[in-house]
Image (cartoon, rainbow, N blue to C red; front, side, top):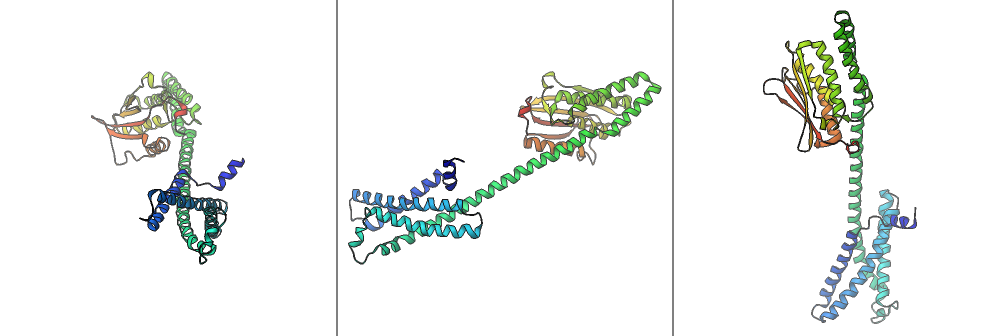
Length: 370
């Protein structure tokens, strides 16, 4: 630690605004005293000279007191039973030293003005002047301590809020990693069972199913430990998943994935699009004997990426929008982007639900929230 840094630590809390406030108070006090004591008895130049002298005298006392009180506050132990008595002692001692120094400067270090009137001694002058400065010093110290405590409380609150946000992000990432590590085991087991059954009844269809499953795993596995991915990779994952489900559901499921080439590199948190596709099948198409159609699309609106999943399923039910998957998407969007991202659910004109993820458009990994 350099010498300047050590010195600065003694007087931490001294700002230009505080200095300006002290100078202004000294000026106002000098003007008040000269108007009160000499109004109408001197010329303007005499009044100005007397005011300037009183201003400089008050500034000397204020400087001594300010530096002493700041040093005491910053160096005393941060315990009320120690710091506050130390501040009281600093106010008393610094105000006495400041007043004595001002009187010495006024008399050019001779104190001769005390000899003009035998009734006035240095102690009498000190007793007449010192209480006023001690009282002002105590007042300013109280204000300073209050604002320092408020600032420290705000800083602790900001740190606590940052810790809470980081904790929420870590919890979201932990939940995401659990979800990624699972990769829907029952879905994989069901898919493998379907492949085994199809190899006995329809080998060609089994090969197609196995190809889709391999595409699914080829996209999903590299992303298990990643915090973000691209819209293009997420679309491939959703398309492979829907391809597998289409073999299982047959003509009950139709789908299209329509992602413009210029948006395929847009950044998107992983597994959100897949979750919406799964939700559309589970809650929209599966309950209907005839199934339905799913469309995945993306566009730009108001400098935001809009990723949309439409289905022609059964539409809203009592539990629509309250599932764990949708709640997880909303929580992760809020944690990563705050109010700049959201998940909206709506009704399609004919039948079914549309789910839209809106988030800031970016293709830069470094621009994503940490």
